[in-house]
Length: 154
Image (cartoon, helix red, strand yellow):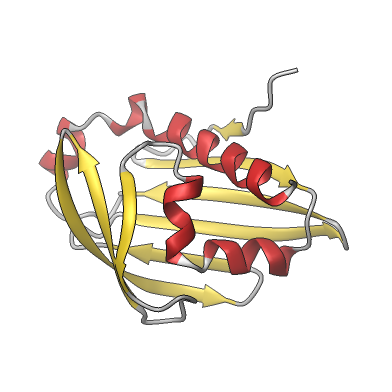
């Protein structure tokens, strides 16, 4: 059986979501996601290479830098714009694309995790459109959630 996340059809251009149930408590999942050093481990896009700055646990307003590669290597600085312990965390970078993780506890040992990528209010929409995110972002998010599940359910 192949493990896959469900890609959610939002019906909204430049707003994508995927979800998956992870058999761990919400606080354990949240703490893993809130540590930017873990982002490379769970990244399904292959773009995140390493944390280069920031705290070991994110908080509202925290800034963190990441080494990235999409064709060429680059660095990006993100800022946490939403933070509810064990419930949701979101960050954005210079172009204001928003990455969000929402955690919905099913029971003490199971949590539904919804990852979203929102570029509806992004700066430089020409750049977003040029990258054709509809062709790869939902799949990359699904892979990220599968990676997260595998890492946490070891």
